[in-house]
Image (tube, rainbow, N blue to C red; front, side, top):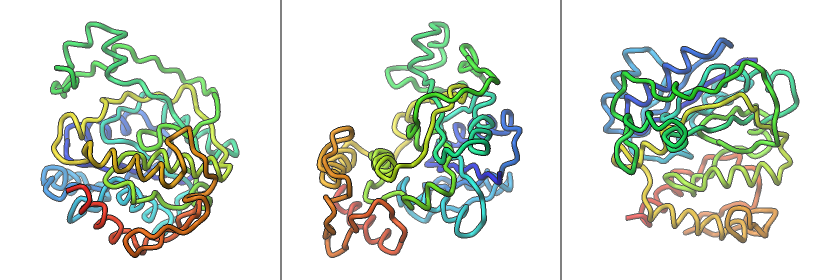
Length: 300
């Protein structure tokens, strides 16, 4: 299987470097890496990507997470012929066997969306009190980048075991075969700059009857929203509320309480002169920049 590992960054280079290091240390299967640098002023990340020769693109302004992931989709499935993408967050540590197990299940089963399991900084500090010294304050800021506290409770196994149906951990660590893209297409950039885009993608995948599973031994460590807690920019509470309201409008209820089986109950929705299709599959990027411009103006 020809696999692309895609990552979106928005500042916080030391965390991105830890993520890439974990990929290099743990993944034995063949893969290629591709990075979208989403913060135009992030010169440190741009210099690092150039110095390491990691294939990447750099955005000239903040187009948001959905647009950035769609760039990864295009790189994988429009510009190249990868069989699958592993999307990994840039504040994530892949534990041993995690990504290889996702790839193995994708190769040997009909599941198109293959999910992992999260173990985050809050759980680590709860389970291993001595780990708390590495995480500072209520936001658990991490500054000791030469330390590896996530290894204090590294419960990993090479034994691959399929758990319940998946469709979780959408942009932290999950594998998507091209069949997912064929069924439901791109991420919806209406959820700018982030939040609820993953809920929407899950809802569309469920309604499109996408075969999925969770791999029990595919575990990753999550620093827990470093773009918010240790970086400036990204999303805001105002955008979170707008995205939640748009999700409810689109699906007739909040996540888990949806009343519609098709977006907007099967009717086209006019968004400032842009017609949003009532379809599970988004197969065009033509209106993305215009949509982002409108949402950006609303968040000011």
